[in-house]
Image 1 (tube, rainbow, N blue to C red):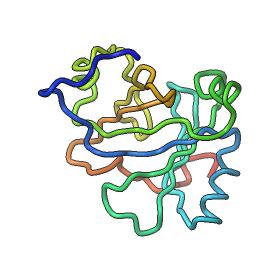
Image 2: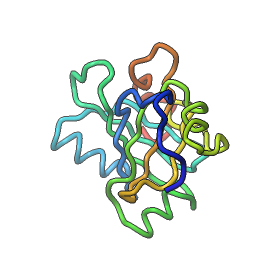
Image 3: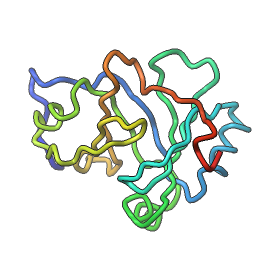
Image 4: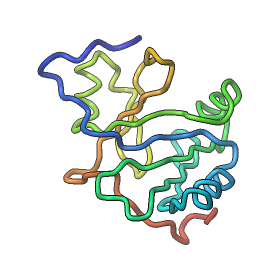
Length: 160
C-alpha cells in the first residue's frame, strides 16, 4: 500500500461522494438502473484527461449530499479500458469527498501530481492501492457544495 496512515491532525474524508462501475456501454448499463431501479440520469459527460465518459445517476428524490452512482465507459485506450480488459465490467471505485484534495494527498504521502480534473471538472485523485484491491478516489467538491454539482443532461452532450 502506498501512502501513510492518517495522523490525528490529518483531515478525514467527509462522505461517500459516489460509487462507480466500469462498463463497455454506459447507455446499456444506465438503462438497467433507470428501468429496474427507477434511478434518473442527471449528467452525461466526457472527461478528456482520462479518455472516459461518465454517466451519473441518482435515486429520484435523493437528499442533498447523498452518494451518486457513476458509470465509467472508456472512449480510448487508458486506465478504464485496461481495467475492463483485466477485470471485466463491474465495481470500479468508491469516491470520497475531502475538503482539500492536495492537502489530503500530501498528508498521506501521496503525490500531488496524481490530481486531475475529473467529473464536473473537480479536482480528483486515485489513491495508491487499497488493501482490498479496489480503487479509491478522492474529490474536492466545489466550495460550499454538499455534493458534486449536478448539471442535468442536456443538448450539449452529443450522446444524449
